[in-house]
Image 1 (cartoon, one colour):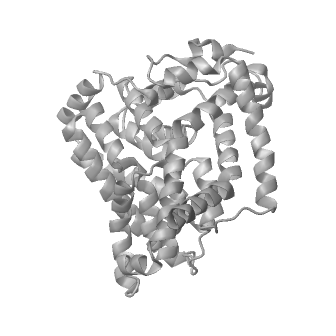
Image 2 (cartoon, one colour):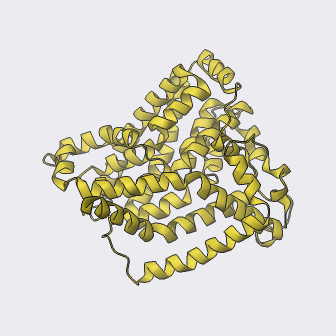
Length: 389
């Protein structure tokens, strides 16, 4: 019981340490999503040209950080006419180039990891585009499209189908401060949390267990820290595999990445590990249901390959520029909560979150949460909550 309590206490302390950063990230994400209409740019994603991939990446950056929602929305874009390559570029950007991920990486691991993620993400998108141009066959895409048309209802389908962006003209500030703008931000904020809180909780629990129960010597041996060259080569290869079996997706894997970094995994291995939220076992099963077994295997293989290569390239680039962190001092916090700047930041952002949650429920939010729970998905622009004031 003492060991269990120690793991839970570490998980709780880590959650408290990152709470304000999570709220800030989701607020910023909601603000961005409130002024971007997804439907307006779907027509730009019809091929795998640089312009289409850039548009897909931009849409991903402005979208959800939830891996499950990103996968579901990518399927929706594919069904509406986006090329399969553009849909996959959207997925990568949506889960690896979002604001909340960058904030959390800087907070727990350091600014170098945030920069690495925003360098490695575009590298992975380019690698995917090249691989798909060479390897992806039209027949496989056609089979995947037929499979995707069969439909698969679920909570992430409802989440992905929602477009809460504010329509109409006016300045950026006017749209955000309008009643509709505040309502849209509150709905997106709450639905993002509803979609991803389990992943964050699981990530924290796994992190607490590993930090409390697994000796540091095990990680040092596993990541071959005794041989620096082998460690650099081994890290990007094994990083994604650790992510696959840990079941942790999206930003929920950042606390675990901190444990792995302190344990000796290479810099490139951490980058590859964080990328691998798109090939964890539950999401691989979703690919199978969405696109069929052959396309699921194709996605898994090409994603893994590009994650490994991106990890190597980031390692090489940062080593050449002298930016690779020299100290392994990621913040895996002790099992305590103190009155410091983190506590005051948490209180301030919890007040902001409470304001958004109250507005969410006052503007018809419960019906949208029920829809996310598995009821038929509809366009939120037709939902009463989207226009409520």
